[in-house]
Structure formats: C-alpha cells, structure tokens
Image (cartoon, rainbow, N blue to C red; front, side, top):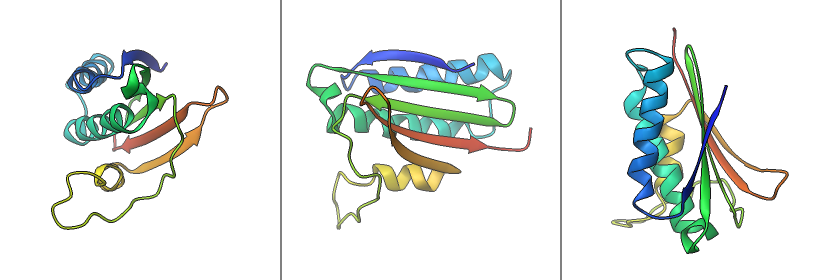
Length: 131
C-alpha cells in the first residue's frame, strides 16, 4: 500500500524525502533494493523540482508518495502546480538547472507527468528489477 508524506516546500525537505524513501523501501524489502541509489537520486530530483519550480516552494507543500512491492518501487511527487510540460529541455554548457527531468529519465525505468483530479501536478518514476 502506498505511503504518503506531506512536506513543506523547503530545500531542507529534499534530503528528508530521500531518507524517508530509503527507510520505507528497506522496511518493506529487508536489505533494500538493488536500485537504492537510483531511487535516492530521482527522489532528490523530483522533490527539488517541486520546491524550486512550483507553488510548494512559495510557502506551500508537496506530497511524496512511495509505493513498494517486490521488484518495483514507484515514486510520485505532487505539488500545487502550475503543471509544466513533462518534456526534457537541453541544458547548455554549465547550466545549473534544466537537467532534473533528464536525470529522472536516465535513472528510472518509466516516468511521466500527470494532473491529479485535485489540480495538483504529479511527476512520477518507476524502478523495476527481478525480485
């Protein structure tokens, strides 16, 4: 069953979200997942995105949903929007930004962007392995 954490849209919540995801994965799957590093990286990217590019970072909050089953982890981050296009934009040279969704695409097996019934913008990623 998915677990949901609602966190304030503060930069300090990004490492907390990463630790929470790791704790839940190891609770459900003793010993963790062979994709722990990929999951941690993508949680960081999706939660950073919510803090930096949505109303969550302007005094709001975001939801982190973690669904763990043998051989699969799904991460969702829902923020108050505005909903942005889910495509990746090329970074130029030494750009500090605009690489997050490219990282998500590279390190997850599936990823996407949806708009929830309540209007929230939801970015998600799935990780799979042979259990």
